Amino acid sequence: MEELEKKNITSVKEEEAEEEIDNSFVPVYHSFASKNYHSHLASDDYLSILASKDGDFLLSPIGAQVKVSKLEGKVVGLYFSANWYSPCTKFTNLLVNVYQQLKECSNINLGFEIVFVSSDENLNAFDTYRSSMPWLAIPFSDLETRRALTQKFDVEGIPCLIILQPNDNKLDAAVIKDGVELVYRYGVQAFPFTKERLDELREKEKEKRDNQTLSNLLIHDARDVLFGHPSPKQVSVASLKGKTVGLYFSAQWCIPAKKFTPRLISVYKKIKQQLEGKEDEDFEIVFVSSDHNQVDFTTYFETMPWLAIPFDDPTIKALAKYFDIRGIPSLVVLGPDGKTVTKQGRSLINLYKENAYPFTKTRVGILEKQMDEIAKGLPKTENHSGHRHGLTLVPEGHGGGAFICCDCDEQGYGWAYQCLECGYEVHPKCVKPVRRDPDN
Image (cartoon, rainbow, N blue to C red; front, side, top):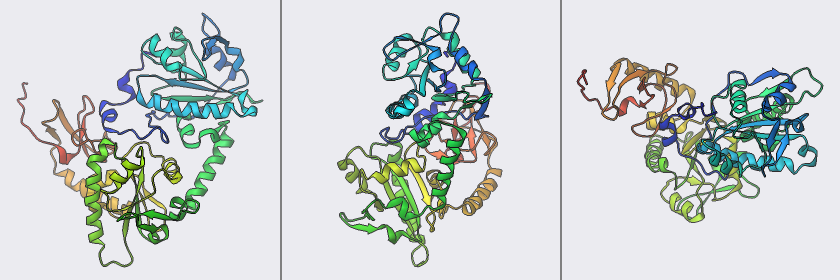
């Protein structure tokens, strides 16, 4: 597992620029997509590959030896992780919670287990990290087995959770490679991770999105109002009906938000000015806080000209999970009908400012075409004062697409100036051209 290079797990700029959201309700993790989420292998292969020529045992949480054969007939999760990577430690906290809930169910306890496959740098790091885990582990000394599992299941990034199903009277057993995503999205409800169960959950999710309204998103029990200004003004959720609404996930402690929030405030005010006099159209933003306490929430909200969900309201966690918020600040835009228009509001604000309104596919398509025309007149290569290598102009789908600008630390999408040597990327507008001696 030492061969899993850290640079293949995430780029330096992603790790530095993407702010982590409060782990108390949303884990932030990076997992590379797999080409095939489901493949088929004989169940016996799982047991045989977990045992090495030096032994057929795993380590229990207290260090006792547990025979690999004890896993026979169980749903097994192979957890590829490492203590040196922050998204791993954060996902581990969530996974521990899910694991313990499943173990408390008597009908599940005997049918589910997790095996830690370490990519820690040394034995001390392995022991320290494993002490936080209530499940089994492959011995750190068994490098052969750890490498074999990484190769067998094409593990390209961590955290990674491979779910192995018992035969269950079938010739083959399913291998599910997106366990991290499933645990995040469904928690304990994902068990037993069968195709039938996952299809059922996805159908319920689709039904919920089809029936999505502002009311069922923002109202909780008897609370049908939001906070406004000046405090303690309250605004009914019903008053937002027919408006384009942005859900702004942020917190006072979030470093990227210190740059983005003032920009969003400026754009918000300009959009409101554009819509003055239009009775059939309006725009509003609702702050969804992940602040650590009421004082921080109040102080931060006082800087904002829009509405807010009350601090520590259960709706906050529900919205973060529902919209799959992996990091903050994040801006989800809802249309006048209450349906989701885009979850890329932050990126669109950074790219197009107030021109992004109303954030629809049609509007974004027009803006992208305008950007394509502008790009035709840009230099194909540039030397940027903030980077030692030359940069190449790349479009979406050819090395462009979503990225974090290494100059302004904000999200971008589409055209970018990219270093083909190290992956450094900047917005075209952020390039500071300099002349360089070609011989240096």
